[in-house]
Length: 202
View 1 (tube, one colour):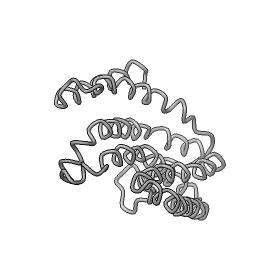
View 2 (tube, rainbow, N blue to C red; view 1 turned 180 degrees about the vertical axis):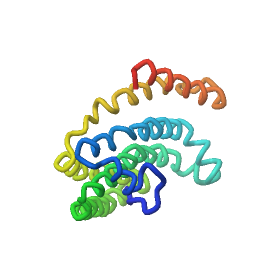
View 3 (cartoon, rainbow, N blue to C red; view 1 turned 120 degrees about the vertical axis):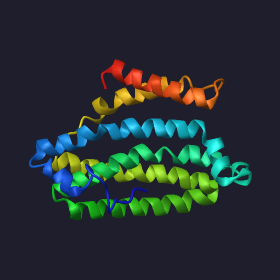
């Protein structure tokens, strides 16, 4: 589950966002401008999903790879886009003085994480824990978004993110079914992703 960053580089520190959030309109811009976070998180998640097996083998060894860790990583990595969004929204809400409301949101997220782990881990082992991590990010995003809508304004998430998602689908084409070697597939997929973003006007 997302944990607020204590030491973060610009432009994601509360002080930096505060400079861009003198009023609600600027606070909205502070959320829209760093949409490039999603542009980065989505291809990282996709590449990790595609090459989870070699990654686990390289860092954990054959024993980990043979006991289901590959699938666990393929599930877990998709927490990343939601975590990036939560991290940014967290700082925007601090900039508009909603620290107390944030505490309540984190309590909701922690309670959900605890209950979901208690329910899913006995049934699904670490796959359940991986799924719970993603679900916890989504659950945390719900009160975050409610606060954002109330104190900042409506954020057009769909218009912000549909282009990266479509570009991601195009990026997947050179990666599956996997006929190309990784050293060729990865740069080719990256070029396809960038070309799709440009073509879509992202």
